[in-house]
Length: 611
Image 1 (cartoon, rainbow, N blue to C red):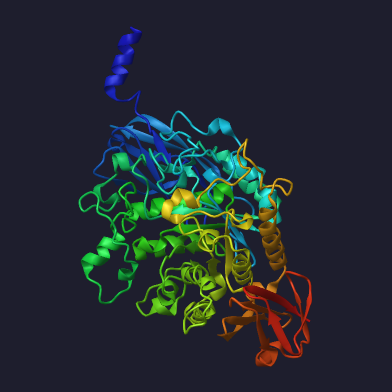
Image 2 (image 1 turned 45 degrees about the vertical axis):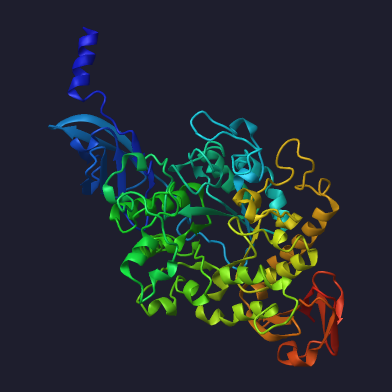
């Protein structure tokens, strides 16, 4: 009799009907935008009619060509934090129910502050930073297993390793942490970089759990530091559960199927561009293993927007960095960005706009006059200064002071600052996880490192440091990305030395660390560097001088990029020096007389607080 009953229930489709996935898994009451789109996924779930308890209004139900999906939109306005019950009916009979929770928001969540030009951002690749929990190096439910001998494989770094070394990051002078993506990336190879995500609501189990990520956020806040999430709007990984059972054909861009991007981002605004070239850039896939998401599809855009907001609320985030920002459908990504900043007015988002022209980068910043020519506003607060990075990666090997060589590269970069609507809100850097290692380019020339870091610490913008540079780490991009993403020494049991501690560093590592920490800890309290104005002087004999100043303070920076010592007269800088007679070098603590000539050693820098 019992077997017969089970058989009848099974064949009726009632007993085993369910939602296998619900996303977002929960939400929050009191959001600025009360409209909530909930994805319910399960076998043939579209055959059921949804309803919801507590007098909550369903404003829309969308079913797609895939019967395993239904998108239900509810109005949460004036709905308190509570548990809702969704009922799914067939022929007026309830087939199954699904609980759904609206949670309380944190106090002052909407007005949370973010990272800005007063911060120094420390960028890490978690798999290569520190292994705090060797037990999660490989897991049964993820494809790629740990193999530290494989340069491009999983090495075992995790969230626990980050937490254990937060005091090191703070000691260095960093105030914000940007980690490359931590969500699940279940690719069979190269999954350690995290940009081919397979579940955007779940931390990769090889890094830890969602609760571990919350703990990381809390531990940073205990130290007065901020957490930046690396968000990917342009693509997912081919192992994403939704890509394996697409809600609809145009959830991703299809040609049909795969076609690679031409990477020509100028087609986004080039008035002379052909339609096919623009489509190939925007709709083409970044690589074959990363399906390109269609942000012009309203369901996709809403899914990505809610996922981003969910992480902000859930993990108490302080900001985003967005990968491949300018490869997205520009109208779609503009709506995504505005929806987030409407919800959180002070929330900073830095977009990766990897272009080599300041006007083209400025096009993508919020309220850009360049973008306004085409009636476009990205609403993106921060763009990344790739032209500045290019200058830092070349200038210090150019000893001859040609028309556009050496320090003229730095001068010319700042000469185009007028293009940006908010020059203090650009992310400045000498390198990151996708570029050549600075110390490799310059063969660990410490003097060149000093010049670059002094500029990074004192020029306008939000400085970002790539993990390991502060101890002299190098890596050859020509050998592949794995070589610019080496393991941090001391992050694994059995490492030859532990550079996380002073006692464990070599003399060379300590030299790099001391210089970097001194510079960026000094920068923390310098409002003149955070928001002050810049006055720069045309380089002479490869000597570049600029000033940061406000009504209270003046900082003078002099860089001798020549291969020989140089002497310059200070009267040329009278409009900036004004009545100051001397300056104290931040690096050495020595006083420098500014009433006459100043002599500098070859390949050296002075950072002077004027007295």
